[in-house]
Image (cartoon, rainbow, N blue to C red; front, side, top):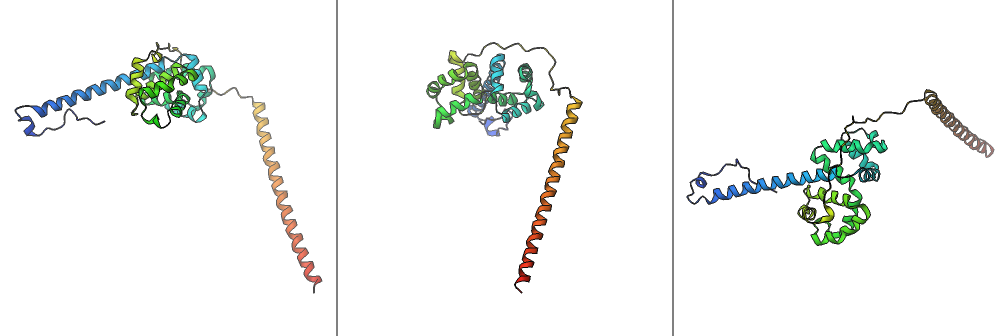
Length: 252
């Protein structure tokens, strides 16, 4: 979407035009641009609200259902060490706190990671219509998505598309504004605790040394086996050469 800048130079003959027609068009474009910006801000705010409304159970289930690749992506988007994605129950409040302060583009990436399976089901059900579905298209396929993944995740997906640059964002926005199934609930309280950091479990020195010794033994055994294999190959080659040599002597 391209809009004129408010400080764009205007030719002198436009300013001198008695009817002021071009000047009015310029003002209209500027007002339209401001409306677009306001709508975009509202969409981003609604996306943040949809993320904040996920309860612990829904957020925890979505995190647990992620692929390893998406876990790494979410950690990067929220500036978390990868190890924190293995914190179990402690991960939910940590992600919630991080989402609260993350930039909108990072929130959007995490949102689609959380709603990945619902999104995949929706796209598959829409088929060729998935690029730019109509309201009727979505009303046809969304009930199955809600049944399988729940209304909060379906709502989250719609809010993500509405805040994105996807061609379908107007119809997604319309559903959020008019369909009672996709009403965004109140935000879940964020625990006021220091952020948890992934800490390694206490190391048992005896176990650690035993593992090191085991690795050393395995390496040594491998080295010996390889040496024996080389010696066997050399001996076999020598025997073959000697056999050929003996055979030649007998034929003389």
